[in-house]
Image (cartoon, rainbow over all chains, first blue to last red; front, side, top):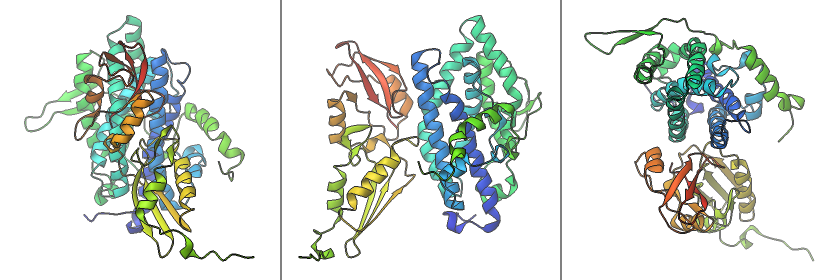
Length: 276
Length: 172
């Protein structure tokens, strides 16, 4: 499989799937970053006010790395890519569509997302598309602090008061279908896999994610609506007992995202030609 | 009397001059430190005959909000040395090990503890499990109060000996 060094060498039939893929990666981080930033000023304690703001800033920075590559491929401005699309042109998973909710909801969603993201980034670090591999190398170094933060909070909430635990369990129950929706295949996923741009099929990533979550949920005794089928030869296979909520990768989003879109694109839409 | 200012009246343009000029461009978030000290300037290429300078820069953290400002400032300064200046933001991963010794000393002087050298080590354990050194009094009777701080690159700590908070540059 030849290395695709950069946008000049991309084969024409890969360009659209590649752009959509980059937008999906970027939109996940962008939308999540926006919701996380809404804790600024109202987080439970001051340290978490600072933490959420800092994490949100990182997430938007990560989105920008991928948007930058889309800009290079399309010639469009960064602002237009980030803010100039209609809601149905955004490609984030519905897991990040939800508004921030209460603190337990934010932590639950962050945890489910970050485990998947960590695994996805590991696999993308060997993408044949070098700009992705390079962006991922930078992102991974920063993500370690986010991962530590969300792990600590998941445990803290699960082992705290009955109310904390109840809110956490309620949040997880609400989020499971969307969490499974994180592994909706990308448009033209087969093409991306064959080119080595994507190095692991979404269905396989889901298995890795379930295998990573299982011991954590078992240790702190959180509901895990997944059955585990032992295999005599290889790794166990996980079978979710809940249907995934799909559609995000194809532009289907929730009313929460419609609200966010209104607000986050408002300034841009007032004067799209403005230079900030 | 009109003056003809020929290109050749520019003092000799070479890489060292560019590095020297850029070592006077401050990091907007930490004005005592230059973009060179921070390791933000990654690579310089000079073509004196064509009066051309190319600079590659990388942000410390991807979410650095100052990178456009830094880029513009570098470009403006270098336009005093050459007629064509290109400044590109690359995705070369930045590491806190790029901070030079002078930068580390300047950080201490403004109350920021420089990061431990990370090498191939793991950042989070390095921050959480190693004693932090107070930049005010040098004590290690310190606690990490928050892994996150006012900017992506800084955590918040406290010194129990001199009773002062300080910022801890995060290993990355």
